[in-house]
Image: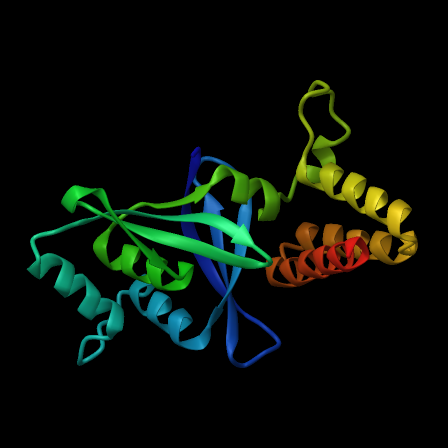
Length: 206
């Protein structure tokens, strides 16, 4: 599995009081991966990013202490799959290369505390990451084999619309809104629009 190293660049509030958008950015690149997480996990990540220590250890602090007490080490965490809009991650522990399933938000909160690298599978980045300059790149001559996220999205939505009778103008409007959201760096809104496009295409294929 090809992996891309990413870093946490911020947490944005959403229209819901119970969810936040965690923004991951590839190291040495420009793609950004927004992940919607809960308020508790957002708080745990924000506390570590800001270097704040609560008077008593939180759950992720406790997990770090347990790993250290067992003479182990968190080697890395990886968001390795995206299925039906849900991201999946694992923790890689030092002892015998043990993999433990985890929610991405929990895995990232723990990785920040342990100083472990954060990775995302390339196929997940290809499917869900957003690129601010993708729209400009589609006009450049990069060879026939290379096709960016937005071109794939346009082609796929056109194919699904043609097969199912889904009105093209609805998906095209969403694509235009997605492009504007990325240009404005509003990644939380872009993630919602992207998910709505997927929902429409999945519904039309059933």
